[in-house]
Length: 329
Image (cartoon, rainbow, N blue to C red; front, side, top):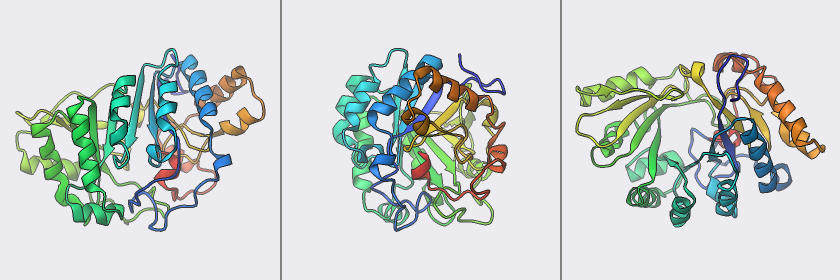
């Protein structure tokens, strides 16, 4: 087992394969997009495979592929097949916006992808277009139904935003009536390339729960997993479950088992830090696998206690202004 300096086990890697995305969600990046990294600054697939192999040897059991939008990067499915062959890696998951995903679902099922997180902030086509700045809701819904038809474990992620999509809380929650899907509502965070869109968070986890209870008075609390980021609930008679993620309030830090690797090879031991180790540089400077392990262990042994400490310890800027596409969603 791999532990940080606070005794928390680390067994889950979120690996961003690209900072590029085919949507322009306003809570994730500016309308004009971001300054994308030159190709030479991105980790190659070969470098990613080496890093994952090293981390699995150290104790990582689960990996989630993120972006940007992962399927924007060419040959991603071949990379995922290679990941599936790493001995000791128990789970491969992916977070996607679903626009380009449909044609790869058969292969994802064949390689044993454990779960898919599908980002969808509205079921209303006009609101979806307004939030994402792209008219792609039909493709996303088609991907959702393909995932359901193939019995792939699926969670729908929706960021709840004042004046943008709070009307979608109940329509999205209603999907749990018919489908064995997890619908997760996420507090808005300031990772949009500009900083927070608000002076105070209007839709925090408590208000989201209040809205759900108004519609479903018999909403039941169900057990959360040992490292769950969400508070989980179920409406009696519904097939699926509802989760609420306090991503801005940061109430789940005490059990966090996650580390992040950005597309340019920067290790983040917390979503709110600004990078604690440039592992790409260490690797390209000729480090052996043992040296890579030493560098990782040094970073894990100085991990922030929670997101607030990580934010206070930021070196480049005390204000969070990165795009989630750059960090890795």
